[in-house]
Length: 476
Image 1 (tube, helix red, strand yellow):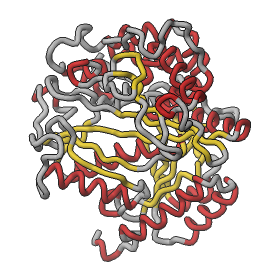
Image 2 (spheres, helix red, strand yellow):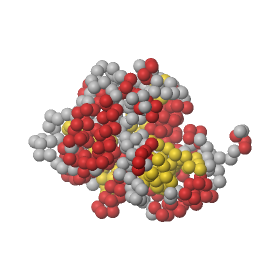
Image 3 (cartoon, one colour):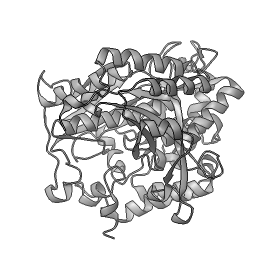
Image 4 (cartoon, one colour):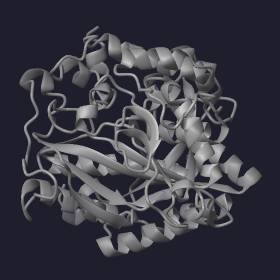
């Protein structure tokens, strides 16, 4: 079929940015849900050039799933979209498989047609159980409920900004081919700030940044990172659920742009031994009435007592939640002190080996940076565990808690053990979801060598939750 016969929606990048920023502002200002719903359904009805709506949701491990619904069908059936939950790892058993998707109309995005295809728009969905309540294993819905409840009861707004590192490798499917190649090929070996204009890494970064800008990310800076072929593209902070959505979109955009260029964007925490791994430094703050309540010009490091109490609770539960922040076998290669790895359960304004850093800030930017997070972790799980722990966790009576000699686990089995034994993680996730998550992590770990050793092994790549597929699992 020739393209001349089609009349699907394509929007220039500058118009996309304006449309996405307008939607983002309404979301930030908490425009009434029923008004946003009415507006979006009218838009979909009136815009004849849209053929499909892509609905996005994430499973328990954070893998992003996308379903395309015909636009005309969605308009008629948006409040009764069912899918087979037993097909999603970590969701329902086969005997109780029916789940529904509910549209979060505020999380609506227009995407560039040259990257995502013409005639489509994106919207995040929430998973609904058979009884109409939010599904307990849909951590996005759990996070949204937690954040909305705090805003209603305490007036708190939870803010987050994430610095997400990744690698760009030659070949369009480098991770799945790793068991044959046993190596990743760099597209660039220049390192920090040394990628020349027009080389493959710089072209990838520039293209990805353009797509993010068009989708309303409000970019700040982008650059190659310390390791060869490593990148980081920074953008502005957002309310916690929107921030987690943007992490999922960031990785999706990176992978899509890389694939179109014949490369692979990888978010394995440590794909290559001997060079710096990839992290996802997670910057968080809490505001109330428009004021950042982490800021105190007279506080230690200008962090308020409220902020320090938040830090102390995370330090107290650091080992309990380590598996949620470092969710793969490969992630424990990154927690290596020889490569600026944040494996010390400490808080510091200067020591980058500390789990938590207190960056220089002012009344707008004061924040806490959790540095031990890997980029492959479920972003909704990360932000739920950081904020709920920081606000509601316990505080240890360990002497000199912020500088005591304590370390994060150096392997996933120790992290799983800490997670299972912890009473706090049961409060955090509930017994059922906690058990499901631990079982998934253990199943992946059992397919890998127990000792990490000195080189990245094929199973830790092949059975990584962002890489494996049903075919691989059925080999066992």
